[in-house]
Amino acid sequence: PEEKEAAEPLPPPPPPPLETKPPTRVVKTTDAKVQTAEQIVAELARGHQMPLDLICCLDSSHSVGQESFDKARRFVQHLVAELEMPNSEVGVITFHHHFREAIPLSGKREEVMTGLEELAYEAGETKLGPPLRHALKMLQGDGSRRKAHREVVLVVTDGDPNDLDETRKAAEALKSRKVDKDKNTILVFIQVGSEVSFKLMSELASSMTDISQEHPEERLVHELQSYDELQGASAFVLERVLEVSLFVRRARCNVNMACYKDVKDVREEEGWDMMIPGWEMTSADLWEWKPRWDVVLPSKALVPWVKPLVSWHPALPAPAPEPLQKPMIQASAPSPAPSPSPTQSRATQTTPPVTKKSPEAIAVQTMPQRTESGVQTPISEQKCEGVQTAIPVKVCLEPWRQAPLDLVLCVDSSASFCLARQAPQVAESGGGEGVWMESGTFQRAKRFLELLAARVQTPEVHLGLLRFEDVQDVICDLTGELDHFLSHLRHMKPSPGETKVAPALQQSLAMLRAGRSSSASCQEVQKAVLVITDGDPYDKEESKQAADALRKANVQVVFVRVLTSSARERGHGCGLLEALAVPRSLPGTSTSSRCVVEVEDSVEA
Image 1 (spheres, rainbow, N blue to C red):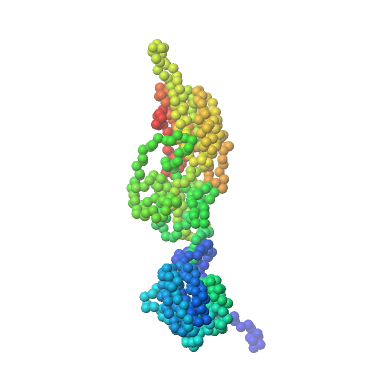
Image 2 (image 1 turned 135 degrees about the vertical axis):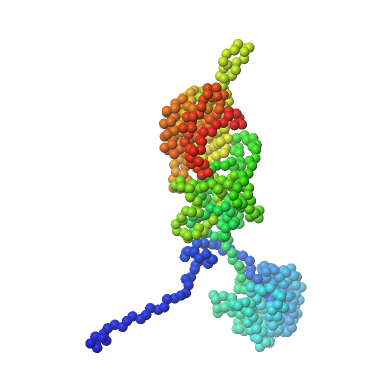
């Protein structure tokens, strides 16, 4: 039994305690709902130079000479020219067995440059300790100086100092000065010629560890053979001691851009403005708003057309001036002003709330939105798959291009539409019922279609043209070229006959079926027929059947009834037109809205 007990395995050791260290976040943000993968990638660009205090100590001993001293002076001028001042400040000390503060620390470029031009050479022996101690005092100042990002003392010399012990103590005191918690003052040497000990200069100079951890063994000493090479040493100094800030110049986010919340004014939302698809780079520093169907970020919502300020088509005569519409007033609480266009400057935008709003702004901001499925659901309530619970993108929608539409225009050419009875001249005919003359209604209908064509946007909207009386005649097939359509419209002649609508409706359905079809890569193409006539047709049953076929094909049918004199005389009604019309539901309209518009037979109407 004892052997059996000894053979039993020992119990497993207890598991190590779980670490309580918080998980590392890739994206730093104040929002707790952050995805693991980066949502924003960015291109960084160089910004401004970080504040620098630079004191240059120039050797003016006997061995340097006037010519080499002038080259050292020009070297400092070159350094000053590369610095952003007054962000950086420069001071100059000349030394031999005495030293002189030739230029106090200053951020004024002209003042420093003038001081360098007037800098005089004074010969003597090389003593470096006193000028290094004075450089420390210059950096310390009287306590009122601004705090620099980095402090640097640069020594240009051609020989070892004669006061070595004092120089070592002064160098250590200088390098031990704290600029901030993680930075000390940096001491850089440029040794010129072979009379200088590189080992000694490396002992006195700062290490690269004071700047970065990439080359910890490197000392901040630059060897030159002569003062002629001094001009090229500016890159060595600036690359090691001068730091430049970075900022995000361009960024791209990988969030689902189709998942956004429509708001009244994005300026009231937290976050950053972003350049949405539709902006194009025209030069290195210039972007322009050039929206196209294949690049913009479209909304699934549609709103009714409102009269915009459109540019007139060059092929049409200029329209007569129209009275200004009074702005609509929203009765609810005050809301912010409509967002400006993308090309408006930020400096001109204002944020005070207003109560008066244009019809265009109200149409966008207050109309319900229609989705592809027909369910009117605000975008903010739609679920977006693959993103956070909180919708990250807030947008303001504005009317842009008209949605794709195939529209067939049918013009009545019957006798009652084109002709009118003219009273006889008694002197010539001795009385009678008069004669039939062209009434001008057909020409006014053509003019109306010209105005309508100028209001639609091609090639999004395709237009077709039919003329009908006893029979129909295709004047122009569906086209997205406005000039092509207008040319056929202007050459269309009247052909009097009886008013029969069925042939025109049947031919319109055939043209729409042969037209564009919707696909996953583009918006749904709506279909519609517009009929201009003066009353009910004579082929009532056939017209009802043709209208039912259009209704089943989801084609909207709208009638414009012109109240001609002939129709008034005959008591020509429009009760059947109400039954033939096929309305279509749009945001802000009712399904019971009339699709028969009655107008007077006049140029103005």
